Length: 189
Image (tube, rainbow, N blue to C red; front, side):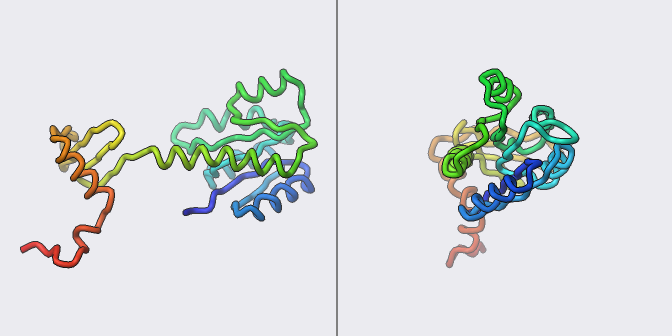
């Protein structure tokens, strides 16, 4: 499985390095930056799985960074954990309503930070496991919706009317690309 990537956006270098060391020790790939403008650039470039975002940043504050990330179409829907000294209830409500998935107040417990990161990333693992859409150049099969489409050159895709058994066979073949073709004795005459 691919190592999960985390972008740490924190203007206090010592805190950013501490977070990076904690998370790299847990097996995550981390990068950090110290201002909001750079955070947006790195987000575009890296498309991290999770962003740890301070609110009080030079260049652009964390709320604006969060808002802009959430408005980007076609971008990865990264989890955002706000980590900030602003701990009033209204600050937490604003942060969460802006698009943050979690909110942790400084000073923070390193153990709690790692636990919250793991909890957020577990959600993404469950979603990846649940999304069962298989695509080939000629077919798209959505196992959850029980829908199959055939794609023909320069024509709109065509929904296939399959029996349950036919659908299961197509889904099985598509979910193991190359396995049938590469199996011993599978040569076609």
